[in-house]
Image 1 (tube, one colour):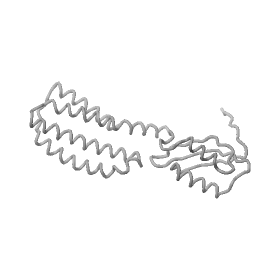
Image 2 (cartoon, rainbow, N blue to C red):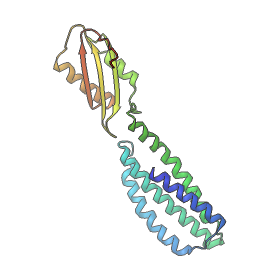
Image 3 (tube, rainbow, N blue to C red):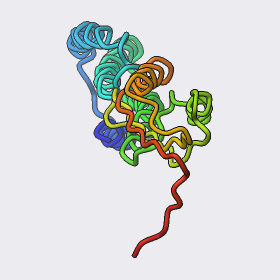
Image 4 (cartoon, rainbow, N blue to C red):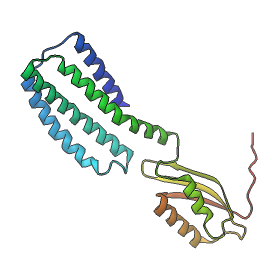
Length: 204
């Protein structure tokens, strides 16, 4: 959200500069932006390999990448200004940078909202989870299956297993826990075993 607001402010400032151009010190701007490219580029590279593991890390990566891209745009605009004297190149470059960053940030915002509202994580196939549970020995039916993200790297599951022969024992539950973790990265399963499916009644 902060990135989107910042890019909105950047775009607004760029539009204003089209109407009221402001001369810039091209050489000085290029030198300062060059330092920014090095610092932010190195920092972004440190986060790059883990962007798929944690939403927070991806947010930090996008923030550093946005800063690096901004610096690159500033160097580009400064060079053209020194070479050609085009005052309009500065706001034009700002708009291009804003559009690029908004495009990359939108997916992060969508995933954040999905996490906020306890949606099923994108990497979890709910149908595959249900079929995996139904394939377990002694399981006749599965109901009240819910999967949601507790954090950016922890996934919870609750489910009712209908097993007419009764409770299968701790070894069964331990194997179930390991299977869910290995196949679906589900780290916090809660399982209720029933000998017959319990009918749920709405309560006021």
